[in-house]
Length: 341
Image (tube, rainbow, N blue to C red; front, side, top):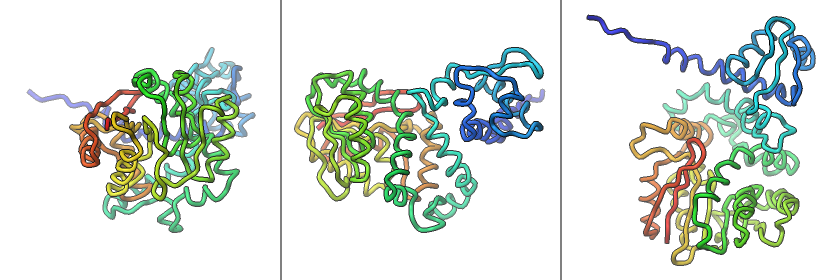
């Protein structure tokens, strides 16, 4: 008796870049902002976006089939509109816009991932470093206007994780928090809104601090969040009861990961907590596909940087002197790894 096998999952994954590129191109064209809260026919929307008629129906209807647009009616009179999700997250007029990450995936990483095989064979980055010897961030941090746009674009997608951390971690036991690599102080602003008794330091490079200060002032939290300039490899971390790092450790090789963990340990009092918010890979390395793909992305971006498991985190933190550990699940594939001194 022959066994029937199904190739559909293989084909779905093999052609997955088709769907990805359709969504990323829609973000690039600012389609979702153009629709806003309204609705348009294909010809109206295509004309607004400057598209050739040949592709418009296929493009917009593919977005309908992929659940990124809704359509009332069929044929030329059918009217397209945003889904609740694209309206909330991919319309630039929305306070919860997260399109900055898809923009960066489209403009940079989509092409770099074409060289994954080269990265796997050489262990070398396939990003800007390969072409001009400089990582993107080095050039970005030298241009204040571009840096501000980048930080604004890249910040929003972490909001759900920071909100869940605020709800699930026992911040009521502590008084001070230092967010290392704090960018626009989003973690401090979100956790601080939920826990009025806390005061914060948001620590990042000098080029970032004026952008962070603007957001802190706008939030009316100037008296509770201190924006601190420094380099976390050269300077001591601001001392606090809780040290947080959101997507920081995975940017570095093992030696540098351990340096940052030891710096966190040294900046904490006895009983203090170190929290790393990452797409933590499950210990058996079977479940969190996103975490594993992110680790491959770190190979492509930086070469020796990588994502890690909760067991890895515990081992490295134990070496630094931490005594107790827990993992807190956050939004989607993200977790908070916590080490207590």
